[in-house]
Image 1 (spheres, rainbow, N blue to C red):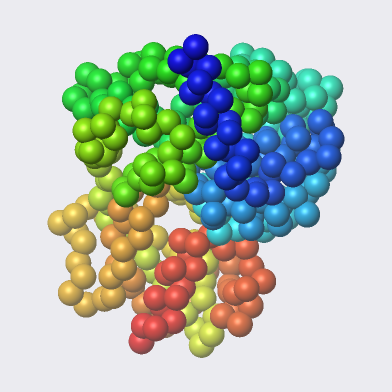
Image 2 (cartoon, helix red, strand yellow):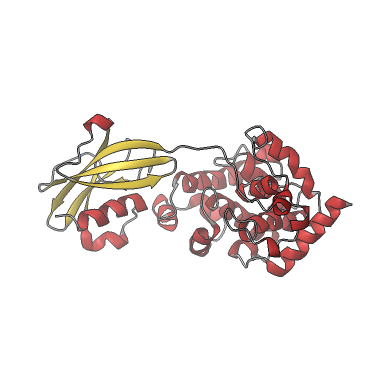
Amino acid sequence: MKNQNISKKILHWYDNNKRTLPWRKYISKRQRLYFTLVSEFMLQQTQVKTVIPYFNNFINKIPNLKKLSSVSEEKLMKCWEGLGYYSRARNLKKTAKKIILQFNGDLPSTIEDLKTLPGIGDYTSRAIMAIAFNKPIIPLDGNVERILKRVFYLRNENEIIKNNIIDKKSFFGKSRRASDYAQAIMEVGALICKPSNPLCFKCPISKSCQSYKKNDFEIKSKNKLNKIKYFEADIYQNQNKYLLIKNNKFKFLKNLLIFPMKEVKKNKFNTSLNKKINIKMSNMDMKIVLNKKNKLIKIRNSYLLDKKNIKNQILPSFTKKIFNSVSNYS
């Protein structure tokens, strides 16, 4: 009975407070499945507010699974440009092709089959099962995890291990509205049980929360230390033209245009003569020295970019940040 009350309270709050998100607007089952697939790929490691305009543009340009399976690499990357983690876009297309070829164009409806698709792991498969297929599953994302840590006042290392948090999901119980319920719980985490300054006076389940009773909302998490890496980027420039290369060297930004660069050891990282910039990417803090060259050279897989045409090119944010630094560097 207690768990039923929890689900009723959360769903009542959701029905009156949920955000209007573009992937929640659909008119057919096929559209619902496609919207869920695209949005879940985009939401991997990216916040909702960032994803919204990209999702709208993507759906407008690539409106269904069949078109996604055959879209050109150039159009796909242009639709994804600036969203980062470009391997997600490539995996999304691979997934679309596999669904067309192996599943007769229908999104698989089991966790096991979903996990055979490129880019879909445990969380994304469960999110799709709950949201798209209305299965009684609570996907464990950062929002859900945070709610459980506060409800049960989980603090020490043994308490915050993933298996323990998964065991605590039974707190939420179940609902026949499984799709709405999974989204509702995540919505409470995103809008109410925020990482700092949670809005407990608006929370539908605050009376069941030990952190609320103790007035202590600190969240303990496993420390994920970013790796610090050092690079030198060569800026070959002739008037307004810059030399870029198609990246086949580094695991990040694969096959995208970057400035010629190499990784160096910390003791070889010399910033005394040249400009240095810092860029964060995934779990990596990149410290980059910009070596400005005044002559263009020939490099395999290189591309000459005119500064005035930068808006028309498919460039990752990483390259644009270096480009902006170079523009102010003389």
